[in-house]
Image (tube, rainbow over all chains, first blue to last red; front, top):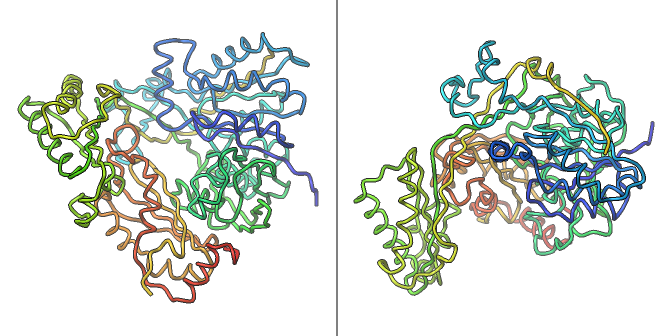
Length: 461
Length: 122
């Protein structure tokens, strides 16, 4: 059996993740690939808005200085990068990277690939005309119902364009809405030469990708097993060591913190899980009920036995549309009777909103410190707990199709400081911000309608 | 004996649109059948009655000693629509571990020894 191992390291689990992690992955020990995941469902609509205001924007800005700074080491160590940092403007992302690289001496020019074609926003009407209804997967409604409010529409694309970019010898691959897991399994397919219909091995890559895609969540971050005992000051993010036969080990650099055990890896495996036998990706359907997991000790967990099934003929499309306005604000009430004061303040606030005749689709009040996370009424708290609360945060949010109503709400919180119950503080942040709501519209599309327009293009700095 | 679920299991939760997912993992193999028996769709629905407006679906992962729950219509619309403090259901996992269940004493004491590091877990 071939013993060649390919190491794919995770460096970012979301946009805003720890900036030191990818540097430590590169510098602390051997890896072959660095994957950086920046995109979540709502990120695309935020990026689309940024691009509307500035045509050169619309990508994960953090990526540029990070990779520019790492380039000498990436080239020196032969580490390649795969990232969806491109957001809705992968080409703009590359241009910014090349600009940043002008200041940095490198052994040779960095070759950067851009994958495009996942962004459907400019083609939406022609797709609809061609009979792609893009019905909401949850409600069954056709997209035409909200077409005029669509802000972003991106297909989750698979491994093929990333593999093509790697074949064209790109050092860095920048994509838009590539499926999170594909950032890990595309290099694995490329390196091990797995066939496009080798469903079991690709499924193993999907499982590896699922472990990698949330960064430290697989290496002790958020763990509920001995959370006090994990050193998370400088955690090692996960590293996948994949063999050609589709068996792999999850580990981390030995010199970094964090922890890799059966517990930390299993916790990540069940994260954001739907039906475990049907984990659908663009390149196969992975069956998480076939995973065999063995803790080898010393921060090594072995995974084997993963089975997969044939990919479907559809791709998932993530659509964001404008759906009204919202704002959330808070005030803090101190003991004695902190909860009672907060409840009284909420009653006053609601009465004032009603007197103003404002229409809201929803007003939501939460008492932070008195069970807000559970959603249970504070009336259910034992009397001793209720009386003993040293402080309670009153948190009120509203949602409306009418921006003016939401704007008016944001002016009704501060008056409670003088014209409300006593022992109030915590308004330093000022008036709450009115935010436009981007609602999520998941849909499916024939893969051919997207894949015929995917493009890969490599150029160097 | 009556215990809180946290004595024999760990968990993690997240969001899938307006549904929350909660994965529950047995600390040892012998704790798995207890999870299957005690942590039913009905009990989970009851536990999250204040937030879960839809149905509760349970999936079994015997290979990982885990159960996965989908709590539909639990995140106030999900994504950026939601006004909830925990719009992504991140804290649902530790909340479910407070569930009171019935478990044999020998399994609980083995799990306690896994927690202290005296025994290795699954």
